[in-house]
Length: 621
Image (cartoon, rainbow, N blue to C red; front, side):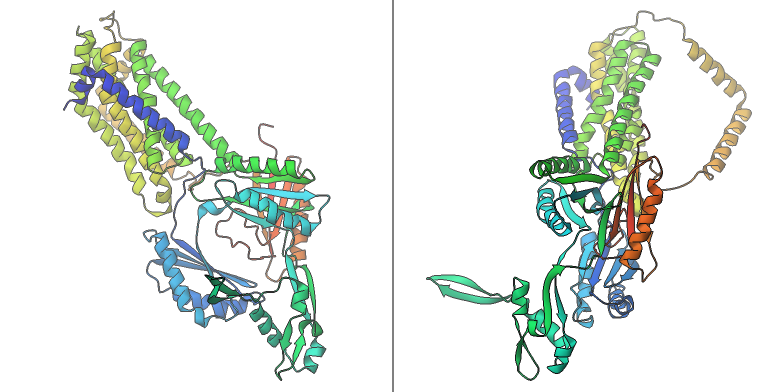
């Protein structure tokens, strides 16, 4: 079936088809999430094992090595990385890319379960999670108040702020940095324990058993069956102090008779500073599949409500990863529009016919907009990869239409009517246009099947380019001949002289044909030079950005204390803030400040680490 001929004879169905495709594309564009990079699945699993108070050497021999030996037997394991700190061991298991992520998580969980009985009894159950590159903080804020102390401010962040942020659509997690945590201290009296022939281990074992709840089965209460639960927890420090302890000889004493029980705050293992002043920070992480811009807008609305409800609370933005995403998105769309306008100008320059230019210009949006509908159907997002793909093919989208129009114009110069010219010209070069389009698809589509981590990113690149080019073929074979048949008119000057640029080009072409050997040698010379120069270019997966904010990570040697890390971080902050272009410095010390490293352990209480987030004046300022 000749699609072009059918479209020319039946213009209304063809127009309705493209109206429908355009509407679907606009709805898809509106529904797509705006992200910096596409969400990708990497078969990398992280095992976090915590044993408070344990030394790194103990964790290495009793925990890390046993887990490593167990997961090393799994099929598809590529690398195993282990980081051991005071009280926590983090084992990162990297599988080969062909391994399904969920299958990798299940295999690691089974491997850890096999050796759980060989691990220390007081080891907390290992936490097994998959590596998620979308789990990095996109926004960081600080909270300060003249009326609240650290304890009250920490409670405000944990209770009020966290609940408000988690209610925002797309927010995956909220992590507090700095502040204090509630803790009940039990300080044993060694002399009294010795007199009673008791040990600290006996007391600890009984304290652990009292903080347990268990199912009590079922019972008939009031004529109805009810579940029974045995409660064995205490609510206050006074209740804990009144708890009876059974000694080895059978005697019973109250806990507060052999220890001092106090409800206080935990040892400071993390701190947040804004320009050197103590604050409480919180990091916001988006959920998988959510857009950074959508999350940031929702967070801003929620914070405005919090500020209105608590005017004595000051909330400042310390780190913003969303603004660069907005800039990339706006800049990419601007370049897309700019490229489209330039393509139309070039078409007019060569065709010199406003009707033909109109037909060619229509092909550009009607090829790009329906592509958004297909991208939405495939689950793609508006990110740097898909927008780069569209920017790259924006000039290609009008190629098929230009070929069709030029051939139709040639037939018009033969004296044919626009209807006849469109029918015969479209049929004449139909196979060539289809072959050209599928050649371009054959160039772009293989990038969607690249191997390695780059291939995970370029899946959306290859498919986006191929989809847009395919829609350009549909436009060229259906809409362009139909519009040409009803819009184009025969040129008034059939025997006009070639334009000057064409005469110059023809002279150059004739010279190259007359000097074939010299032309081939010049081509070989420039090709060899380009290959040699290509080897001198710097390489990298992602070019370095130029933003108005950056992060500096400081790590002290093993054995360093929290106070030492704080002093070094403050010295670094003072040096940095002397620069006139630095507006603000946010310092996160200790656990919870993973910075921009997706492989950094979170919440591990690494007091040797500090991250300085530096906000500078924008370049345009």
